[in-house]
Length: 606
Image (tube, rainbow, N blue to C red; front, side):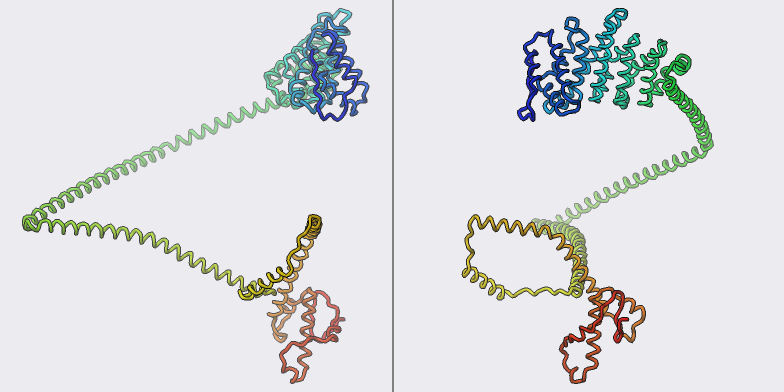
């Protein structure tokens, strides 16, 4: 035996002294006394309060020092020669389940969940199988009661284990040992196994959806066998509850049970009515009868669908037979049209071949005539002029070929350039229109905007200012800063940057509000500039110029008062066009403005 310490270097607590002593004793003890020593782990775990941090630390220490792993290994051995025998084995299974439930090791978590827990569940099933076999053989023996208590304790430990680790439910269900435990004629042990089955379904009811039907059929067969072959109410009640939980967890099993066990409903009604578990029995019968009704309804619908399909197929065949003469006529018409097209194509091909033959004959005739003409010229031309004549002929031929080739090339290039020229003209037109539109929008934007752009400085002015800046820098050079001053300056800059970032959103909102107010004022000013004279104004114009803007109303009042005052001046004061500011008395006479009104000359606020 070898116990390996797996404590991590950064443990948050010191290991318990009792765990260390137990690990050292197991290292030095013999193989037969190890299970008895491992039972002291139960007293160690019971010393801590349930759900406390100390209990969690004790479980982690047990796993870190290999005690939990060793419990899983010890469950496999034969307990016939161990002190306490099967009572010790059952108690050890109970200790193992209590150690595993609530344990979430920080180290080797994958090994714990993928290897240790499945091995513990399988070993508990094997241990339960061994105890069940000895209990069945010693039913009339005085040790049977102790074996039954041990078997129930092992089954309770198994239920406690997968209640804390639900992922083990599917593993337990698929094990062949679980089916062997269920396949027994003993009432007490069979009831205990069926209680485990019910606990599995309560812990994880969706496990039946993940298990194939080949695995479910033997368990269903055994439950139905117990209902049909046993007359004990305890067995019947447990089997009924188990079957009810299965069909309620997976409604698809209702169809399997209804088709696989056809006499089950009558058997349940006749044999188990009035045996003390009528509520579960009535629920199971209701589910099974509802499945039968659904099957009959499906069969009725299937027969109706067959009748509808037969009627439709007969109607379709009769309609096809009625349309057969028209189909034959259409087929003949299509065949004749296709035949005519083929004949026309053959005729066209023959005409093309005749044309090619005629063209070939024409070319041969022209070639023959050309050669005869050459021979005639050779007879006429003097022998000394023959080379000159041949050279002139070749030059004329070359010129003809070049002329034809250049014409073809220029025509092709002209077509290509024509398309490019067309695209170029279109691009020029689009650019001209776009530039005109952009210029128009820019002029409109500049006319509406109250802010005028500053004109760029000339080059001489820029050069003069640059020389002035350079002279200033030479007279007042930058001072060298120490490390402490640089750090202080950096801290100040960071503080200023933080303040700027904190107030940036508020400044942005204020800027947006100012821009909106400026746009509003510009709109109102434009409307006032385009207003008609008072002589031509109507009520609609008055409504248009009714503004809720206090600055606009104030400006309108001031301008109107100034114009009235200037109209009363003598003629010699009107000779000057300079702007005259308003007096303080005029500003003081301006009343408080209200929203939604327009100010008229000579009116007073009521």
